[in-house]
Image (tube, rainbow, N blue to C red; front, side, top):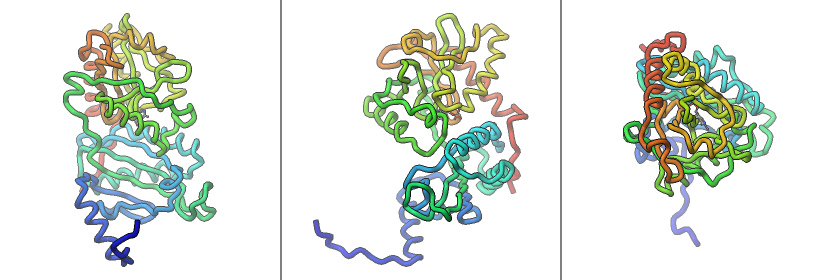
Length: 329
Ligand SMILES: Cc1ncc(COP(=O)(O)O)c(C=O)c1O
């Protein structure tokens, strides 16, 4: 098909104008962005950009992580940095020092002026070629975005949500435990769920054990009242799950739950649970009430999901050893 209009040759100021027009068509809530490539912070979303030949863009050779800003403090950043550093090692990526990354994250949060929201940060191997291995001269990149975060409907908490077993294969363990930007299976799983009229999907591993959801972990309350979570050797180590497994000991002491188990969970056993939970930094803890069209427990949100959510909310507000003060101007 012949093009009827000439393709314009653009100047630098045309490009900035086009990027601003693109953003005007997109209602994004991006408040501040740090880029090591720019050497500073921008607050205009049109300028939150990365070169097209960055290895993270065209080969998926990058990692990321996401932490929450709650009441003007950053929650559990050290756990997220631990995972980021592990992901970098698995991906052969170079990072700034941990202190430098923490400092950039805190200062970018301060520059955003926002007291509630999310922090997502990335490491890339950098631009310089379109090859498979990074360019010899590639400068590793570090980026931090302060944004509104993912928001889920209230009904997820009041009525619970529905999930399906995805038809997409789970990532092999090395890729599942590494938080790389290669999220194609996770994206396809969520799109498939939406097409089927449910809220999300669940990966099952080759042995028939429960894996995780698209960007969240899943856990269960067994028929005899224990909190049961899949092992973290073939799924992402959710910072929220890890913290909840610690906080849940308070429920065990109060005899609200019978025990805490981290182990393989065969699908048939999982389906017979009293409660099923979706867990993650963005969703916190939400009850799953139906899986593949069949109710979990009595098909209503259960008390343990509520109790765990309350524990997490309390920890996010007053877990002083887990909170970093942001030096807002
Ligand atoms: C695949 C996957 N599993 C689980 C999680 C939950 O992790 P977290 O609790 O650290 O948000 C996430 C979110 O980062 C994820 O992307």
